[in-house]
Image 1 (tube, rainbow, N blue to C red):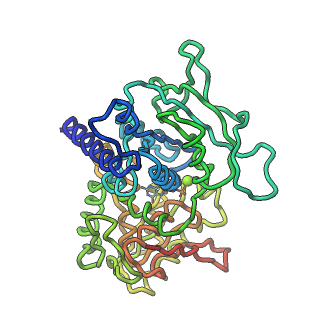
Image 2 (cartoon, protein in one colour):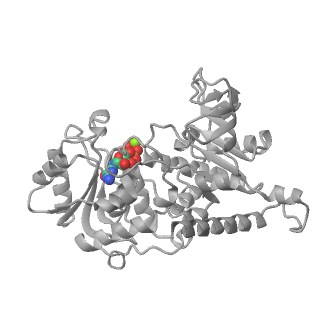
Image 3 (tube, rainbow, N blue to C red):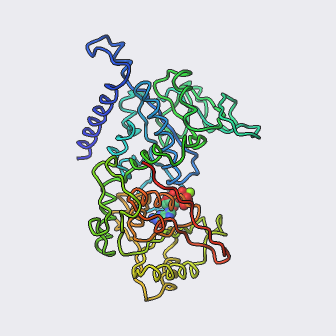
Length: 431
Ligand SMILES: Nc1nc2c(ncn2[C@@H]2O[C@H](COP(=O)(O)OP(=O)(O)O)[C@@H](O)[C@H]2O)c(=O)[nH]1
Ligand SMILES: [Mg+2]
């Protein structure tokens, strides 16, 4: 079954690539020389992110790089190689098997991603690449001297820090490579100081290197070309969660929250391209959802994270105001904190939390369970998040895509001392 799936996905991938190259400007006679075939082979762009970054910022970095690769495809076929998910800081569960080398297909719908840009998994790349080396790695960094005025620029510079090591035996570079450090090496490694948007890398990739596979490490160093424009939203809309995770979330909504797409006006089109909702189109299920970010935030964002008691008060006030009797809680808090919160909310409201089965946790790991929480939050009548949490931000964009009234989305909990309680910036969808 797993093998059949892999064969099928490889086949689909090859089809996608073919379609892509058929539109390329380097169209040649298919019966032509091997030279032509060589030209038609795609180049591969790989990337990685600062190891300390969490899942939801990584999703944002994908968007920046996907826009770059799409733009590279105006010149010739390029494929974006998806960085496997390995050992993220927040994935602490010990009883779910190793949380390493997780392919994107566990979390995302790759066919949907491919409607924006050609992508492939890293293990697929290793298969088509036929060798365990990446041609060139560019480690992005800031300018050592800092900067006084913003200007777009990039320069090859000595590395300020360098996590890659030269292997004198193989004459290659060792590196982390998404947890494939025992198997994969790079032929060349250099550092580039850069200040600018992801698009600044395009001329470099087209003119200054002809390597077949190029990896950009610390890709979060470059910014979105245009944050919040229609292209930004296209790539965001293409980032659909995998069907299996959405199904689990939907089943939970139906069973406990009296929430179904037809009733809540959140039916999704088969392709994201056909989905152009307006604010207010979606109603959402009859529940309030909160993303209560705790764990490290209690320490590092002390001023923004309310006490559990004050969080409970805010939730009760909101539920009452909107006549909602059910409260769904997505949180990274330990169970005892969740129980305290539930106690503070009291018996006037039904309080829910998604509790995965042991098998679900094994199958989908901490990352998958978090996505199910996000999906359930995305379908609530009213959503309240945590300040500066990218986990909350991704729920907000999901709700923009579904077509909620922004008043029901851009809300957050506040600390008891924060009398102003400024609400989140409203990043509205553009088509
Ligand atoms: N299941 C679940 N996990 C969460 C929740 N909030 C945070 N997490 C976990 O903690 C991580 C937080 O990191 P990140 O994605 O960077 O979001 P941020 O740190 O809030 O900006 C998530 O990726 C999840 O693994 C939650 O409500 N439910
Ligand atoms: Mg984080």
